[in-house]
Length: 500
Image 1 (cartoon, rainbow, N blue to C red):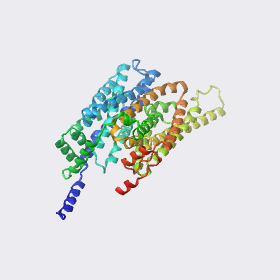
Image 2: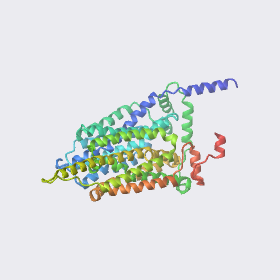
Image 3: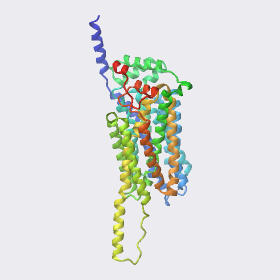
Image 4: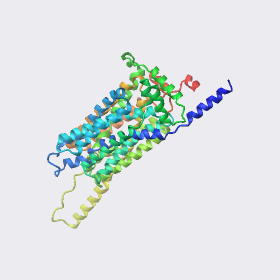
C-alpha cells in the first residue's frame, strides 16, 4: 500500500500538470472585448468635441462650454452607476451574464450617438456607454480571476487594462479617417462580438459551486483546463474557500485589519483620479489644440495612444520584478515632472501671432520667421510632456492601484470595499472632468495642470508613508501587517517561514 501511494500521487500530479490553456485564452479574449469597448467609449469625446464646438457644426448639435463639459463628464457618471449595478448583478445573475448584459446599454448608447439629431441624444448615448463601461470594468476582472489558474492568473489579470488601452488607440486611429457618426456605429462591433462569443463560454466554476451545481462546475472547469486535467483538487480548494468565507460585521470594520486597507484603497483610487488622467484622456485632442502643438491634434492623440499601450505592456513586465512601491515612486516622479513642465509651458504659451503689418521691413520678416520657428520647436514640449505623463501613469498609479486593492482588501469585506472604491473613483472622475472645461475656459490650461502637479506630490508622500510593499508576500502576511501595524515593511514571520 505504501508503495502504491507515491505512484498515485505521481499520477495525480502528472494529470494536474496537463493543462490546455487554449480554451481559457478564448474565454478571456471573449470577456476582454468588453474592456476594449470601455477604452473605446471612454475617449470617444476627444476627437468628437472639437467638431461639436466648431462654428460649422450642426446648430442642433453645437455645444457651448457647459454642454461640452457635460458631454465629456457624463460618461464617468454612467460608469459609477454601472459599477454599482454590476456589484448587484454579479451575485444575482453571475459574472458571465453581467458582462453580456453590459452590451444592452452599450448598443443603445452607440445607436443614440450615431443617429443623434439633438443634444439630449448625444448626452444620453454618452451616459449609457458609460454605464456599460462601468459594468464591464467591475465584472470582467472578477470573471477572469475566477476562471484562471494560478500559473497564468497574473498575466491574464493584466489583459483587461491592455485591451482597454488598445480600444482607446483604435478610436484615435479610426478618428483620423472615419466621421464621428461612424465612429459610434463601429463601437457596436466589439460589444456584439463579445455577446456572441460569451454564449459559448462557461460560467465561473466558483459561481456554480456557490449555487450548489457541482456537476456543472466540474464540467466548466474541465472545459477550461482540458480533458487531461484532474479537476478534483481545484474544485475542493474552491469549495473550501466558499465554506470558510464569513460576512464581516460593523464592529469588525472599526478594527485596523479592516479599516486601514480600506482607507488605503479608497485614497489611492481618489488620488489616481485627481492626477487628471481621465480629463486628459477625455479632452486630449482639444488640449493639444489649446497647447499649440506643432502637429495636428488628431495625430498627437494617436501618438499618445501608442505610448500608452507601450507603457502598459512595460508595467506588466516589471510588476513582479521591480516591486509595487518602486514603480509607484517612478510613476509619481514622472507625472510630477511632466505636469510641472506642462504648467510652466501653459503659463508662458503666447497667443498665436496675428498677421504681419502691410509695411514691414526685411528685418521684421526675419523676426517673424524666427518666432514661428521657435513656436514650432516649443510646440513639441506639450506633446512630449503628455507622453511622459501617460507613460508614468500607466507604469504605476494606473495598474498598481487595482492590483494593491485586490491584495490588501480583506476577502470578507472585498465586495463592499471594492464597491466603495469604484464609487469614489468614478464620482471623482466626474467632478474633475466636468470642472476641467470650465477651468480651462476661465484660466487656461495653467490652473488644472498646477492642481495636477500638487496631486502628484501628494501621491509621492502617500506612497512613502502609507502604502506597504506587497511583492512576494502572502495574503496572510499582508493581513498580519494591517493587524499589528508595527512596521512599515511587511516582514515574514517565523511561523510563515517554517511553514513554507
